[in-house]
Image 1 (cartoon, rainbow, N blue to C red):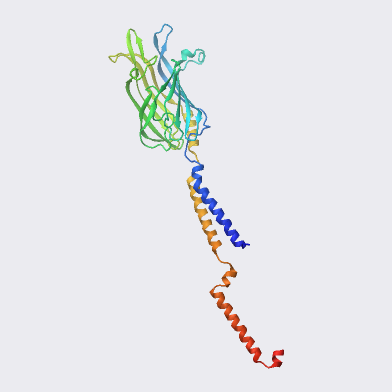
Image 2 (cartoon, rainbow, N blue to C red; image 1 turned 90 degrees about the vertical axis):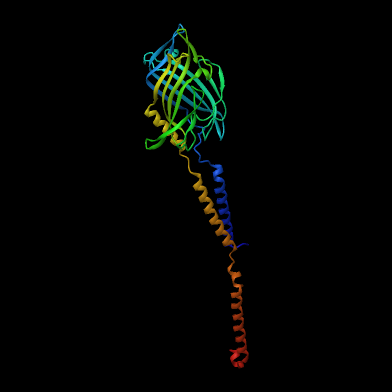
Amino acid sequence: MLPRSRIIAVLIIGLGAAMIAAGAFLPRLVSDDPRIPLDLPDTTYALRAEDGVSSRLLPDGTREDAVGPIRRQFHGELIEPADERRVSVRVGTSTTRELPPEVMGTDPILELVDAAVWTFTIDRLGGEFLGPAMLTDQMAGVPVEVPVDGYWVKFPADAGPVSYPVFDDFLRRTVPAEFVGAEERGGNEVLRYRQTVEPTNLATLYRSNTSQIDVDGKTGFLMYQGTRDWLVEPESGMVVDIDEDLDLRWESREGERLRTALRFTGGIDDQSSARLLQQALEVADTAPVRPWSIALLVIGAILAFGGIVGAMRPEGRERGNGPDGNRKGDAENARGRRRETKLEDAPENVRGR
């Protein structure tokens, strides 16, 4: 049967080996990357312009400018399919006029400027599109496939002071979002990126029910230009605020402004932005796995080494049989022989005693 000391040494070796294995496989089993959680609540970005201008369609088919508060909203929700790497997203976009409280909600057509639903798949960590998007324009009602790339509802995790290609839903293509600078929100650093859209004829990019209209006998082409600022929590890459300065209007071939489609200068209110920032910080707040992995590897190696040393250490009985033990035994034998010789040489009466 093994001595107790060796049994303990074997148990220590086993414990050390288990800790080494746990330290090696922990990064593979537990991710500390700030991926979009699959249980993330629906997220709404609601922008408001106090003095906006929109085009209102009249019963006779003509249009007039409607001046007043305007809301632009992006409502995102996670849908299936989804896995460890990717997730499907449905984003509803809408632009509505803010009517007086006594009539708000009584006539959706009077309030609605435009609305659309985008469905696409993104990388949960990087945030980039992983395929084309499906667009359902509420005005046209026919789903169309739109090639997309870059980012939109999420920037890359660990976003930095660089430019990113960010999708623009009016252009249906990406526009560089240039890094502007860092600022503080509620004691936390956020990064500001700015998209600048040069005057673009949308009628040359795609066909829609508003890309080309007739205005007093003249053909008007929908022109678009503006700037959009994205404020991003850098660790998670989540968008926490948006500011827009947009101008959509119909122009003649000669560049004459015939009518305004949308004039919007506004952003998200402070309270909503603070909630979005808190949500982004929760996504970014993942437990660091690497330090725990290193600690398990080091402690496991120390225990395993100590157990091996203890298991190979010779027992006390075996140590007595070594060179020193042999010399000690020879000396005791010599003393025994000398004693026997003295007893033989002594008189009988002494030996009797």
